[in-house]
Figure (cartoon, rainbow, N blue to C red):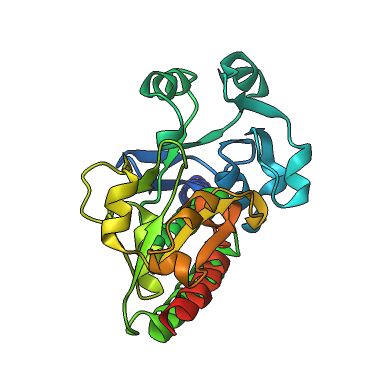
Length: 293
């Protein structure tokens, strides 16, 4: 009987251990459609975009980031994280030496060859590329799963609730024609495929170039004048007006110019696809409402 009892006890222990392992193991689908398998929550993370770094800090996983990309500056604690990616490329040797158990990379921020080189490090690579506002909430949940964050569910729910409130307040109001300028010379803008167009729609504004094919496109002055935007928008770090829209003041026939609706948003809030994008949306909605009135 003792042998049977011992066998039963051993079986129970093995079962409990298996259950414990199963409770920590996780499978997440990233934004490239690839399945990512982690045996346990990530403890040593390489973050390869400022937005990813910001999201990880918001989830309480900031102390687990062993390296980050250039311009990872929010929250302030992120500024002390070692850099392994700059405009010149990624320091693959340093990443390997840090022995991460998870690399989170901005999908379109690096060439496909670099993404493949990261995968050859034999470290799980999560491709982060939210294309919609809802995808930001989903990214929060997925990164929360990978890090076992106890904040993720609440943060994602709050994000969705705040977004829904903004849409309820503004989206059904009279439509305002909007032009978003990415670059001044040459003049570059974004098509309806870009998340910024969804930001505009949330405020009840329509992108005058929503029908363009490319995500980012070059346009000319004449096409902007012909579309008669009622508001012209740019984004700069910190929301500081550096004169990017000043050239449009030469065209008083534009409603946006005639009514002084040239708006500079905070690029760090708008471009990084984090919770702070809601602050940029709220700021834009107020400006669109001014143009509407």
